[in-house]
Length: 92
Image (cartoon, rainbow, N blue to C red):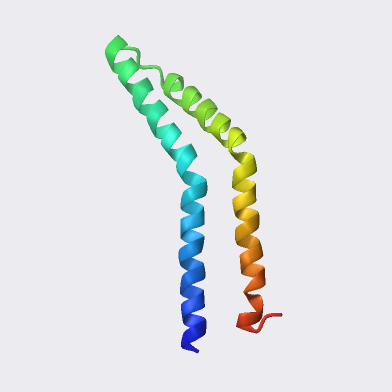
């Protein structure tokens, strides 16, 4: 039984790391664009709300589209590892 607990813990850790790797590029680009737009707004005294939303939205969308193939490959690999380990839990 402790062996199964270790497997579950490893799978949960791997799940969190996979989610972090998938989300990190979009979050970092959103953060950088948000800081740049905020700096621009502070320097020019332009306080338009859509000016901060639209560039972040397009930047995150662009990064997601560029990295979609590697992201899908990473998710597919993780899913295959989960399915390969199902027999260890008595589910296959």
